[in-house]
Image (tube, rainbow, N blue to C red; front, side, top):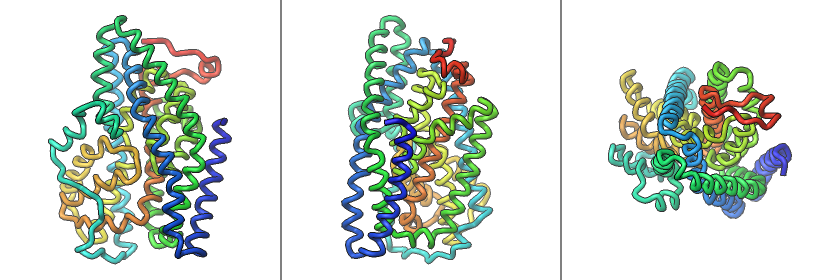
Length: 420
């Protein structure tokens, strides 16, 4: 199926899903929960298929990307540039969310009823400890990390494996070639899985609208509108910063990744868009070795939309409870979120765990999360799409810095960039 045709089908499925959910919610309210539970099996099955692909695809592409770089010095240089951009983009995202939520003050404007103190959000936060971070970072077993789709742990193992392979030089060439074939096979499998994307989009939107109804959007209209305004501003900032490096082509990049962005938006999962994003970045002109290296890192360290949501949501809940955080506390909160947000899986509601843990650090009741659970899916759609945009721009920027970004003429001619 062509990219444009699949995009059209996803858009049609999105509209039909909202319409079907609205009809069930209003005309068949008594059976809405049953309908939602059945139709949500479609996105559940699709995301399971995506998870089936992610672990071998990330491992194969990242190891091959490192292997093709040829030496450890190049790996360190590219990785340093990527992490430098990630940290900068993270600070921009977190700070922008903090500034806008305090400027717009949705928590005060909406005047929502405070949840009962005895209620529970159902989100397991856990304490923020250095030991917990290390456990999340370093896998006890690569098989266990792959079975649970722990992207950050897979990335860590792949980095060690790839660097060791690069150090062996020509002796590891057969392994590089085998994994390169594995990566291409997994991308082919991705093509088959993407055929089910419209059904998943339909099920996701029909289910959430049938359960929550359009009314929830009206009640939380101010918060949702201001959050999406913040996302638009973040998009403009990221595109502008990317344009300073790669020039006007950044707009063509955004057009190129519209399908994976739409897929992430519709399914509320940036993870679902990973395989297609990698494919489109290479078609845009990013070299395989840089894209295969930077994009997996970005999925662990550069989730711009999710990070901005963390500061936005924490301050929103604080405003509802009338809790004022000092400037020093806000700086500490940004620093904490810089660490705890790393390695957030690109799956629905992962940000809520980080937010729940952060609330407890500043004496903000965790039950405040109940204010967001009803609309979190709609918010997750926007931040998942933003994660795709942020990582696409980051990969293109690092490719440009490395001299590995083909020109439009080279892309049309099928030429590859010169190796450094």
